[in-house]
Image (cartoon, rainbow, N blue to C red; front, side):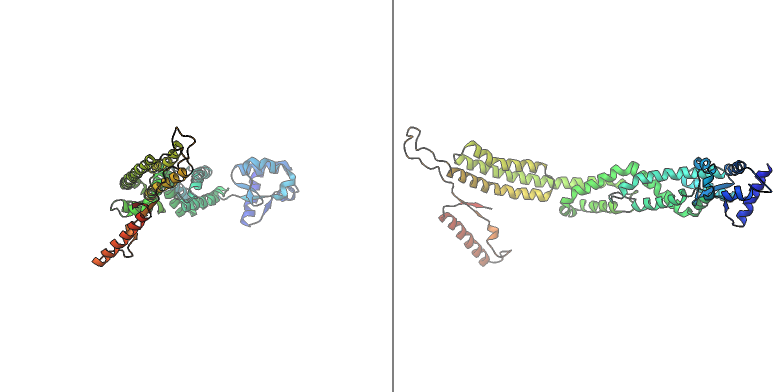
Length: 409
């Protein structure tokens, strides 16, 4: 095929001279006139054959025309002025071999021996990496999961290679990014193992640390729980925690045992205080004749508090509940006193016309807190003790003089 040989030689000469070959000029300006006089279709077919043989690329606006669009571009004369022919460079044997070796190191699979097949192989493998990294990216970008920077770096490296549509440039770029690809291979295996296998353990570690956080001050004081909590935080803050996640289960168990024991002890203490206050409330309700609705209203808060305490996991909230229980009796006294003021009983069942008698009044209460009666944090002398007792006596006697009921707290 002399015409094909002639066209191949001409493109080679132009490439060596760095001359741009516009398809329109090739068809109408060179081979469409004397001494050649080739029909337009013949030149188009020769160009297409060189493209199929992998010797020439058709470029438009700086980008290689893909195979699926090539027919439409070559058979439309109006587009010929925008089409440029570029001689393809072939990958030498040494570069092919080094690329295949690198692909084996990265993908645990040796790439094909021919340039085009190796080009397609690399793109397929890198596309697979890209797909996985893009699936990991949304979680990593939340900041609650590791690998954000490694994923971003890996995607940038892959993009530099996948955007090369020419096999020679792609393979050349692949080798030039050898170090970045090796780093990515190491990171990719860790990331894939994490997001497919370790993610539940990671989420369990995060949730456990959040659960223990309200009790952090007390847990940090414990010889076992304190170091375990610190280690949990270290793992969650590590940029590459993948090899540390295996410790999560043991750390959670260590802290949970201490935390559960602290909560159980504090809960028992609070429930005991609630039981004592409930008993006092019952005594108040028995002492005064109030209707059922008032009794239910008086008992409801302490019962609700008890249910909340049985579910509460925060030591601080349990302490707060104990304080609320101590104040429940005061609320009941106030509620009963208010109810009695609105009730008037008849003097006797048989004397409806007799004057009505008011119900028994609730004696006001006086809460005395001995710890608040001394300005000093410590009593260090007999004089301090005498002064404290004198103040306490004065408070007690003053309350009795006012016919107040005294409650010591």
